[in-house]
Amino acid sequence: MRIFDPHIHMSSRTTTDYEQMYDAGVRALVEPAFWLGQPRTNVGSFLDYFDSLVGWERFRAAQFGIAHHCTIALNPKEANDPRCTEVIDLLPRYLAKDGVVAVGEVGFDSMTAEEEKAFVRQLELAVEFELPAMVHTPHRDKEAGTRRTLELVASSGLPAEMVVVDHLNEVTVGEVADSGCWMGFSIYPDTKMDEHRMVRILLERGLDRVLVNSAADWGRSDPLKTARTGAAMLAAGFTDDDVDRVLWRNPVEFFGQSGRLLLDPATGGPAATVDDGATFEGNSILRGPRA
Image (tube, rainbow, N blue to C red):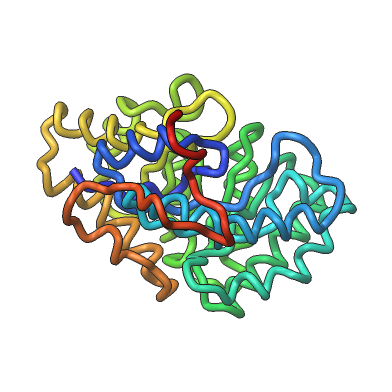
């Protein structure tokens, strides 16, 4: 089983997670720009974070045989904080970089006017840079948020096939399917979707335009949920080719629209090994020899 996790927050994960993900078949991933869990207090905090996504984290993933990509944006939650919103003016410097495969996460958290303003502007940037958009749907009032999301996408000029609307469930998937956008599903231990509900949706709606992710972050989550979904698909009668389509070919097709996929490290070969001499800006993932 080969896996491309299209939405996972690896900055919050450990090297053990990278090792286990590689062993489970993960060979590529996309890490969306995210919030910290506590408020940022200035724009500089974003810039250091964005630099880590296109630099250190890509290096760290490569040490475990995984091709790391990212998306860049002001996330919906922090779009409400006036200390943060000026970062939108600085996004173009990052949206032009290799390995940045979409604008995201953008969208709604609490359905405020400030969130909508930031969402619309960042959809404009996706059009300008000819990049896909990764859209976050709110955890509260999800139906209304998804509906308004689709209205804004339709008026943005960004083709529907360039948009993935994420964190869907049984209630919201129908409207997104009808819109022509890609459908994203986050598989979690307790919240959002689980792998068995995901399999039922696949059985009902098919495999087209579906992205399945672990979305693993600093909360209770599981970076192996993509592999667990693949196993659940096989147990339900899907073929190995079906699993490959959902967990590999679909994300390659969607993010391939950016023209920036970095998949050479994911083409197979011997098991990943840490290069003891490898460093990024003078730093390595090692912490010195064992005494």
